[in-house]
Image (cartoon, rainbow, N blue to C red):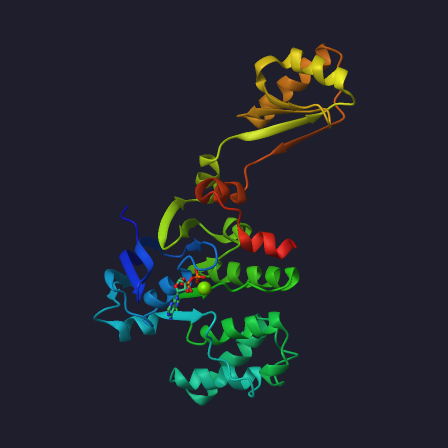
Length: 319
Ligand SMILES: Nc1ncnc2c1ncn2[C@@H]1O[C@H](COP(=O)(O)OP(=O)(O)O)[C@@H](O)[C@H]1O
Ligand SMILES: [Mg+2]
């Protein structure tokens, strides 16, 4: 069956003065799926989203959204998209409910439908208690949920989420993930930008990694991980003597050993059979293992191996 792409962009180029920000971005998003545009600060994520959502004209390249061309049918494009991100249209002085009703009226809902839709979204986004307080009193997580709710007033089939969880505490991030998962389950097509590998890993069907305005990798999370290699099995022994004996027993399956913590690392292809074989070998040699763990490559490993850089967003967050 022919695939149904809701968003198709090819050869997007954009410069600000002499700063070549996008150097030929291609991406497409299938109906009802999420594509995560993953990249560090300054990679060109927001610029890409602004182009896709008709807020900015590219220097070159083409985009269609639901078949509408952003260059010639921008008005049509705007009727099918919802945009939320760094420049959302929430009025700080109005309450959450008032913001939603106002946006509903802007989208030409009748007064009573706007009121009803506002109530529905407030409930869905866990904002009922805060509904009648000015938006300026909202916490970061509540504010982000209101931003998203406002962009959903007209139930658009396509949504752009520009770093929806950046700067949120872990609990608010999880609740935003739940909301995003519900939107996906309801059939919405989503393009989300993020600096967080884990977020792309958790939510996205497809991941496009960009750096310096170029696509440096794309695929499913599993495909990207498989590019950086296989799972590793780490065994820790009680002393150097046991480690040495284990290394002899296991032979060339051992790729490295550490004489400080008495650990050995093995590359495995099939977790169940390989781990069993290793344990059988050790038992036969009367060697006991203190602890063992299987490590799968993370998207962090992918990012590191693709860019040669550690992802700043993760590093900063942990510090
Ligand atoms: N309006 C603008 N004028 C000049 N330079 C800009 C403008 N917007 C973004 N840039 C530059 O474009 C590059 C990419 O920015 P952006 O798309 O915001 O990246 P990201 O969203 O991935 O952090 C950065 O170097 C940024 O400084
Ligand atoms: Mg950005």
